[in-house]
Image 1: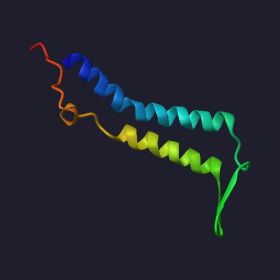
Image 2: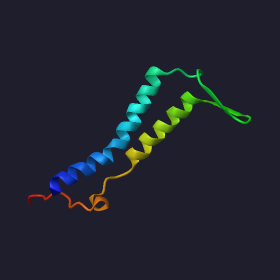
Image 3: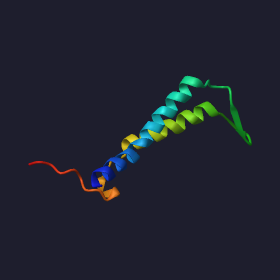
Image 4: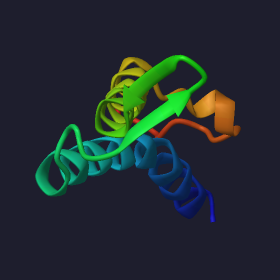
Length: 81
């Protein structure tokens, strides 16, 4: 059971970079800048660039983070010394 808990906690940890990379690739591959403009009062911006910035920030922040088994209350794998 502990082995599966360790695997599942790592899958949960690694899904953020996958979502960031997949969302960034999908946005760049299938959408064009300048098509959807969003305006809030006097401020207007392009939804393409907002999405690119959001997925890139998710990707960079998740890659800068570190996995710590203590956060998930899982013992590190045993080493044969």
